[in-house]
Amino acid sequence: MEAAINVQPYDDITVPILIENGTVVLQNEVVQGVAVAVEGAIVSALLNDDEEIKAWKMKRPNALLVDASEKYVLPGLIDIHCDAIEKEVQPRPGTLFPTPLALMEFERKLPLHGITTMYHSLSLGTGFSLRGVHLLTDMVNQIQRHRRGSVYVRNRIHLRYEISFHDGRDILEKLLDEENVHYLSFMDHSPGQGQYRKPGSFQRYVMKNQGVTVDEVAVIVDELMERRKRVDYTWLKSIVQKAASQGIAIASHDDDSPELVARQQDLGVTVSEFPINLETARYAAESGMYVCVGAPNVVRGSSHDDNLRAVDAIKAGAAHILCSDYHPSSLLAAIFKLANEGTAELPAAVAMASLRPAEAMGLQQKLGSIATGKAADLILVELFQGMPRVTNTIVGGSLVYSACTRH
Image 1 (spheres, rainbow, N blue to C red):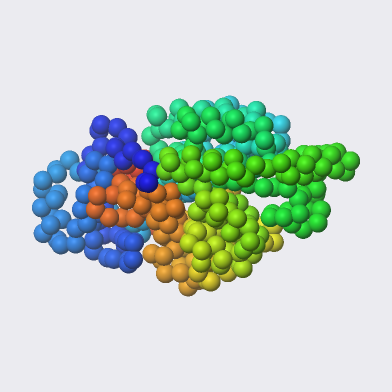
Image 2: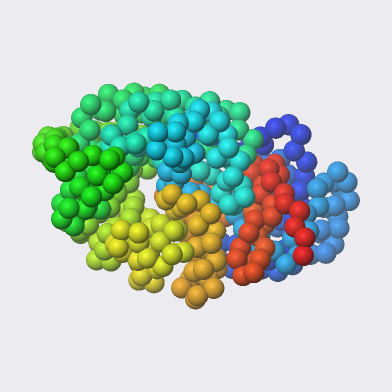
């Protein structure tokens, strides 16, 4: 079932747009001399004949002509996992900003990074910092209100559910019933496995970030491990079925073994986010799951937790999707780094942050690549001192960002 998405223009005053002279990155090739025509909310034509281009312009004298000389034309990026909105709400410990302000300011930054569809990752059940019940509902409601009046990007909600958080079951079911979830992932942040498989790593993280003592963290661990024993996998499977009936993709998080991946698949999970090691990533990919790795990992060259290097998974054919995780500007940078270093051809690298996530979310018929009839979500990218930067962003046929650069 393909998830529903509105590809109507964001307003009633969109004008036709013609992007000329650029290097256009299509699904399987990079082409020169092709003009991308936008009318209403969609890409209406790919024109590669001078006479066709001339005729198109004559029929649309009010069209906006965009010169993409020395620039790449890419599909808008789709970010399925990013929790950076949390830092906008709480840039420093104990300093909370109003959610409407934080969301508005965060969204304004996204077109600069080339992100046209953002799955804001909100956590239910970890209990740390912003990742508790006290702010989750407010953030969900604000994002939903914002979506109805947004003029920048497509805002969607990625709900991350901690499977041992039994008090959150009613909340999760309510959010699903109200159709307030667009992507759902299951997390298990308990010590001894996944992200915290190394002895003491969970305790060190909690003590550092929450300022608790050794004795206090011991209590936290004991309570968490007791809750983990009571996880109801039959209920989780029913949640997967309910979500799937709404076209919602389901992900696992920090898988650390093929055996765990197999159990996740049995639940109905189709995306494996941030597998801990190459063996697990390969197994997930070979089993037909989408594997998502972090763009910051690509840019930095390593995992901040000393886990799997994303580039190793990509080289092994065991990773399909890039997400920004916590650093939105890394997404575009990772694409060009992969291409420049020969890890992937440019169309394949671009697809990791556009077509592949669209496929995983069930949106590939409308988003994810530059093709006639698809939504006009497009970005223009130039290289500055070897680094990619966005100069123009179009979402749903509307020009939402344009930079004046001087050389």
